Image 1 (cartoon, rainbow, N blue to C red):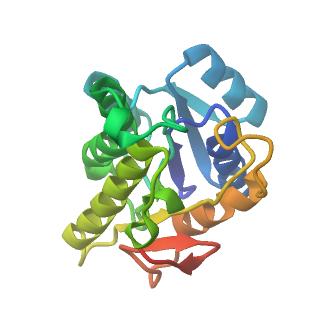
Image 2: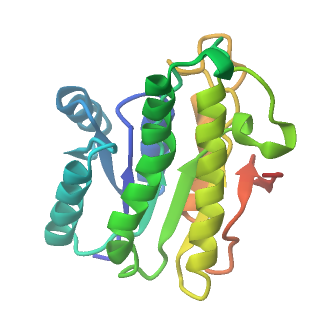
Length: 228
C-alpha cells in the first residue's frame, strides 16, 4: 500500500513509454494512459504496468480516469503530463489556420491544466505529490524564435501554467515543475535527434521522485534549472 502511484499521459510510445519504464524500475505503480485503447493496452501489457484509456482533450475522459483512480487507488502520488502534438513543423504563424493553432493549444496547454485540476484532489491525498509537465526548449521565452509556432506558444503557455500552479500550491506538499527533455529520437523528434529516450526521460523521472526538500515551480533540463 506504500507503493507510490503514477499516471503518465500520452504514454503508449516514445518518451512517455520510457518515462513509464523508468518509473516502474524505481518501484512505482505506473498507470500508463493513452487515447488509443488498443495501442495503450498493448504497450502497458508489454511493460507490465496498468492501463487506463485517456483523451486529455475531453473532460468526460479525464473525469472517468479520476473516478477510476478514486475507487481503485484512493489517491495519486505522481502525475506526468506528457501527451503532446507538433503538427506545425515548417509553418509560419502569420499563415497558420486557427483550427490548427487551437488543436495544438488544446492538447499541449489546456489539457495539462485540465488533467492537473481534475486530479489535484487525489494528489492532495498523497504524502509526496509531484506533477511534471513535459515542456520544450522551443517554449523558452528567453530564446523564442520562428518555426513550429503553435507548438512554441503552447509550451510557453504550459510553462506559465506550471509557475502559476506551483505558486498556488506553495505551502502544501505538492511540487510542480516543467522539464525540457531535449531533442529526443522518438516518432515526434525523428531519427536524427541526438538524444536517446533514456536521456530524455531522466529529468522527468527525477522530478517525479523529488524528496521533500526538492524544488517546485522551476524549468529543468538534465536535472539543472534553466531559464523560462
